[in-house]
Image (cartoon, rainbow, N blue to C red; front, side, top):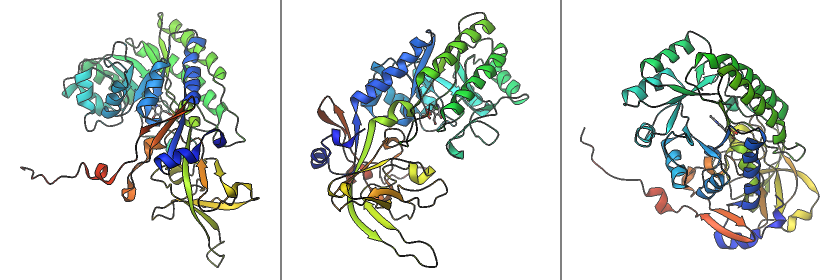
Length: 430
Ligand SMILES: Cc1ncc(COP(=O)(O)O)c(C=O)c1O
């Protein structure tokens, strides 16, 4: 997104800073291309949008209009998808609920709305049966391999908490438990992680096709196989975009192979989150100050650009050392680039947007802004607002949708009243 294509100062005058700006045209386009993948792969393919990446109602509505299904992680995600118009129930299972642990209302949502659970542990099978659930289930399997831009995002292999290990006796015991509990396993699932490398992703999806072709005969009720999400997004300017055309033949091959293994059609699914939404958003913040430290025996001095957004608004750099491209909008943008550290308002030294994966400062070559300029963090649509928090009682920032020359506030800034709305003083009869 080119920041100069949007009236950022005018929007800031309306909603204050920081704010998220979403471009509806870009979003529609990427959702449409993802939906097109299903047709390109010859039908019998479902594309779920992993709504954990961005669960704003307008984003969900546009995903529904594009014809996508939903990958949800919590009871509340299911209910938010329903509010955006996605049908509940399991026939067809438009919403799939993949949670590692049932908490809050997850079991209640499954029981009341018939949403299909994707179980990731034997205990979850037991809990479903004990709760009285007697419907179809999907089974998430850890295939023993995976990839990630950091260890935390590698969701396959022995160090991953996700899914049921693929080998016996664990797998056979889980199958038996489901059968004994009267829960037919109608779908198999694996999500093996999210990395930056397109070829690694492609290679691992191909491995999943082989993996599930071997496994399918053990699951006579299975009518669907889901390869999870993880389609990369190019966060760095020198990275090339993932071409969905690379995935099309892999999905087509999966449809053909699974049908021949099974002797009847098997629906193939993927559930990308980041790929659909990362590139449609900017996090726009205000430069509040520029200050310096000096080198001494403890290390090198730095020039800090202090902005009003922090890891409460966009946590990926602080959490994973993730890279977000940065632009300056304002007087300072014409200066020659110099190494700058961009830091936020929180009382944490790690509240820095220019960090590497080892928690070290990673000064960025940028024109030094003036206080009052805007600083824009790019590609902030996935795991941005969705992972934001109220740390130090900051209100979550507004989300603004830019659609055909018009700006619409789709969520407002949280106030202190929002923050204290759940506080109470109730005696508990224990
Ligand atoms: C089960 C599952 N599916 C899909 C996704 C989406 O991953 P991505 O946003 O990288 O496509 C995730 C991400 O955590 C996940 O855990």
